[in-house]
Length: 457
Image (cartoon, rainbow, N blue to C red; front, side, top):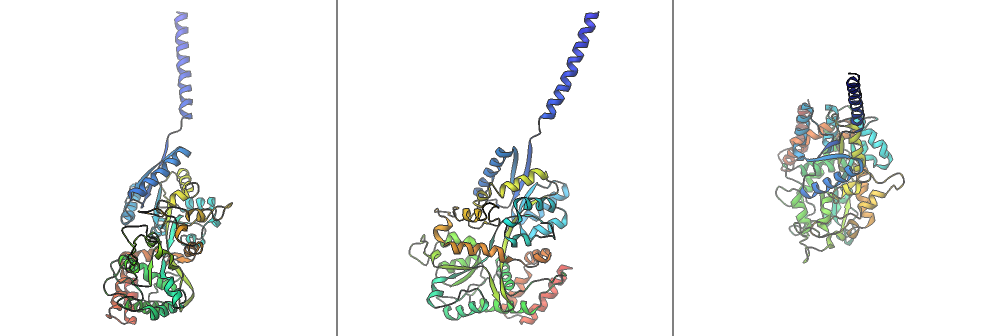
């Protein structure tokens, strides 16, 4: 009996030891960590690149990343629904328009984003992209990349005729007076299709150049001001020397490629087409549609100035990484920091021609990412890098636009009003009616003021 009892005691002791040993072992085994990343870069080739970056991040950290494409037009609706269900992703790559409103709605964690920006170094960023999401000591999101809208012009024609660079209202007017010779050459191609966001973008750039904003410091709507009046009148001048019809981005690019205008407003996504690297948008002004000659005779301006704003302004489109309130904060921050440091050039090369570095370098190498970006492949049907076609000063001027670039309302904390204007296209609608002679400029601005005040209530 004693031996049997002893065996039982030994068995119980071993079992207990096994339980505790097993418990200790279980505590030592960490659960696999994973995060979800929403991105608007949904094209197949861009998805492949982002998934490769995610795989490299997992190998480096053990944190897996589920990369989920979300159509930009559906991003707001998807985020709102996920927030209501408590199912937000950890990180969202999104446009500027959502950043401030998502913080106000409780979707984004501004403290988490601010910690990342400070860890990377605020002084390694262009100041302008931080100012757009500055909450007074915190940042609504982590600036990821961006581009400055360009006034694209035929530098060879400007040099031939002794014209100043078209970076002011008056310089543009002078160039039009000299170069406008329809139907062969129209002095400008302004956006006139009110259904297209492009018209909103081009006009906002023209208005910002003259210091015309849509709100004052207190959020009061300011559509009917002397600065806005000058912008409306100047834009009508541009429309009157443009080809007839409802014009949008494709028309302006194609006409420029065909030697039909000396000036257009476009994004940097035109750069590889100018260099003859895209079969879908051939350079038709030359016998060889793949030539890079148009790139070499083209100039760019990012900052424009109107009579009421001699210092000028640019228009910037910036994208941000937002860390959500449902995130695994540590893992999300680690992923964003990785994307903005070790993998930053890889992240930009997802679409290098239009993804320009907003973080210029590191503390030890202040121009690391600018220099590296200039050597990234921007080719589509043929390979090429920026520095093959554009001089260093041209590349630098494009980055300078991100520093001076701004947007209506955002720096005053009223970016939601700008988002509303873009959603409704109300500015483009009234502007087009003024261009077509349906209203005087005073009538147009009065109508616009009343409509925007009503919508903002």
